[in-house]
Length: 175
Image 1 (spheres, rainbow, N blue to C red):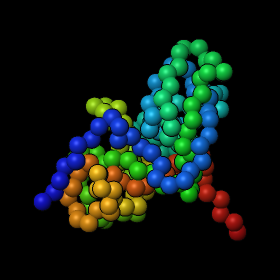
Image 2: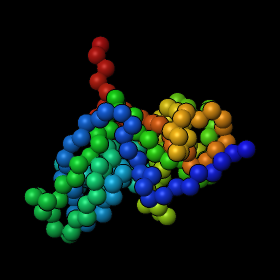
Image 3: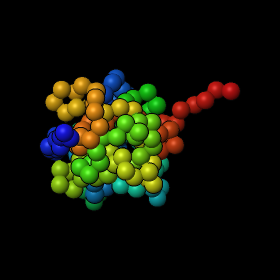
Image 4: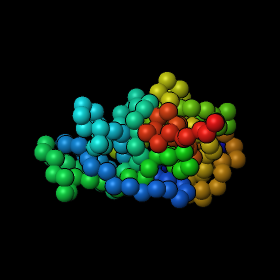
């Protein structure tokens, strides 16, 4: 029998293993929550980060390790946020969307992220292969954090890595 796990605002994306933690300036008029996926800002402000969208496929910097709200005027001394960097070594965990049942054929597949308006968290959208930015590595059962043994459960933890083409920290391949 399939289980549907309850998701809350505390189920934000986070690193699963050791990762790089780096501080970045945040662009103006941003409300960043812990666990928000961040990308480079544009229009001459590429040195700052902004919230990502559901359709992000490039320019990802990482995941916010803390919350911050900025105003319409950039204040360099205070408008900065700690970020778990999305590099090729770091595995992250995030909840799957409620209409995506665990399917082991999703392991290794490139999928997208979706912002959950109800809980204000970003979730792994295993049914969307249009806006690919992460690859699913395995599934974990909420509560126990054991590897999922059966298919069919929903709103579980997905272990994933950001794709090299989606993050600004692309893996370097030596010839």
